[in-house]
Image (cartoon, rainbow over all chains, first blue to last red; front, side):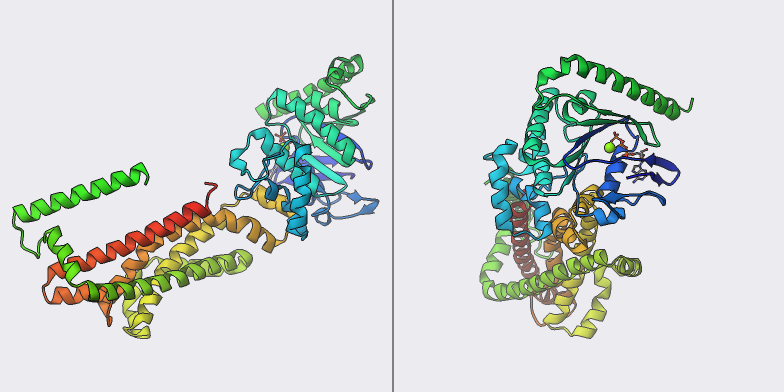
Length: 256
Length: 245
Ligand SMILES: Nc1ncnc2c1ncn2[C@@H]1O[C@H](COP(=O)(O)OP(=O)(O)OP(=O)(O)O)[C@@H](O)[C@H]1O
Ligand SMILES: [Mg+2]
């Protein structure tokens, strides 16, 4: 995508945003709150059209955002599980909408449960689950909707630090086996570097790409990586960039 | 039986006891307040006509209730699927609903006669509006982000209605249905009092004309029994169906 902008009334959320993602790549996006990360995802998911002049290309073909509806698998910032559906039926929601037979979809989901740490919970309802489990059900729903491109908007944002690191390792594990292209939003720089092939730092609103860094750390990655010198150096650079932007948006919002 | 139900029953029994003692102790005349025992006695003596009247009223209320529920939900679905219709139809519906249903009863009796049909129509009107409004409120309450998520899966309007809006609206629809049970019997009885060939309302009206107040009370007892059991039944089904609340 190139030259993508998006305004809501007088608020410009994105301006001249450009990004290109290779198949199989894991790209993480960090940026100050309100810089337009979710807006970016809404466009890539096909829910919002960019302003005139924005150019989107998907699989080497130009397209409108709305043509992407049903073609990328999107996990929004909140889990949005349906309270009247149990774990399995929540997980197969997208497949049902695609018109897959419920029986086949359920069977596939059931086979996937252990991998998502949900074995034995298929008959539970969302209000009976912990926050981390709900998040995994939402992830499973996203994985079962088999599209090459996955958009994950702060999937671990609501989790405590411990659950979070476990989920990160688990996600890398699953990603390595299923090999999808992932765009991943987070507030957490450690998480961004630990997971990504490439880290993107966004500017304060209106959002654009401030900095893009390749993460040349070997995979599979282990938790002790966060103390490796390359990791720390990269983290320093990214934190500096974010801080600069955060200051800008803070000054802008206090009207100074 | 739950604790609160037991407490409710205990309270009711206590109230009836006080009533009995007061009516007997002060020897109130029957047109002021007959004793509970006299009323229950009358219910027993007249059980055959009371039963058939109760049956008729219940059938009218039930038929009108069913029609009202289906029509109320149906119209709400229509307005959700065809938003332009909404702007035109909603104000008209609100205008009609702002007048108490009782005000329409002379017209309904005129158009549908004093047989069963007019009672069913009146109940259907009263129930239909309640259900329509709760269904519409329920459909509108859906989180936009959930609808967006389903759109991102490629869902159209119908799929979103069926898989998201309808279930999400169920708690409100069910609450409307529970409240409407009592309303359906009230409206059926009131319409019968205005003109009918039978039913509890008709019995009450006849009894008033004959100054037989114990009979009025016995019809009231049967009506409340019907009303309470209908309310309890729908409430129980509601708790089972809407388990996630
Ligand atoms: N539907 C909308 N209508 C009006 N303004 C909007 C809308 N969606 C987003 N915005 C505005 O666009 C800007 C970017 O919002 P966005 O949700 O993309 O931020 P974000 O980077 O995801 O923030 P966070 O990290 O807090 O999730 C915000 O200033 C927000 O107020
Ligand atoms: Mg966001």
